[in-house]
Image (cartoon, rainbow, N blue to C red; front, side, top):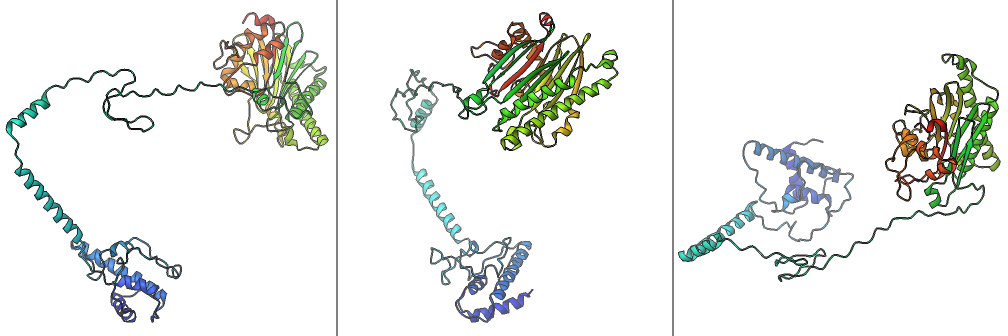
Length: 514
């Protein structure tokens, strides 16, 4: 309800007679809200009147300021009333929401006293200014009465202008003569040459040591490290190795990686599977994946020769069958893990594992290589010209830390798109590895070449401090290359502590020329 100024004044007069206590109008209306006497108006009506009264008062002040005049406080208002009333921009309280709110009592009895004497708004500031002027007059009169001999002033000026001797140099363990604080906050006395206590010697750095612990759960044990050397044929040789990571050894966990090597006719089959560290039976899933893929490809590739592609590289019809074989190998791995889960009555996610499958076939002066990759890791081909071809891309899920596994739902629908081929001349070596090694050469498309032919690989050292060189300069030159590969994989690199598995297939005759 909107009231005019005259209606508000009439309402205030009625309230003044119903609650006859001398008070500013807005203060009177606020007190009426909590009054213990019966008044002829409701709380909502009084609260509404307060808002209208303040609106009118603020409007009057705005008009005065606009005309260049300074609004003066009401002579009946206490000097501190302005600090109690809300400003013009403050929202008014809702009458229903604040109907039962009780204003807190003030510590100063005279703060809201209705009989407290009133002072002009600038009374205190004028009195303080007068006191400061009187004090200034007294100081100036005292200064005018003091006299200083002229010769005394001259001598002091000359003394000030004279060069001062430099302080003597401090000895070791001494401090200036001024008072100062030590690092602990203690104030030393002003004594010349006060010795400062030497700081305590720094504590020696203790390098944390990795523990090597055995797993408490001895069911389904696996070896912590394995290696083997395989003479594939007169031209090709294979070095295979897998070792438990330092983090798994420190936490008393099993090695979760697995690999498998197969051969049929002139085909060579290399399989690597990396069990997820978060899956309690990942080592079982990895072993099942690797063995199932190798066995399935051994069955499917038996007697198959891509003769049309060998005769004409533009005819890729035979490669379609190889692609189908790799997809079937992936499905075989998935079914093997599903059987393990059913037999053990466990969830499929308890067997999470990645899968990398590579097949190789020599075709005259070229080598045909095909690969299926599910999850992280890498497959690389190194040729005599010093180039490295990455056959496959380490993929992740929707989030960067979510790795894809052979057990990922509906992953089999993606197998066809994950198969890649390469036909290369002068191939020196092939390698399939888990992420425990490939991550140390990130980004793989630029740095994986160092794995084969790098010299003093950056960031990698052996435990004795020796530098780490590429596999073709070290491992491939050893007779027992499998054992040499196992020792090579024990290099140290900051932030690298996962299981490491690598299969290296190479031509010793071409290695000598690298």
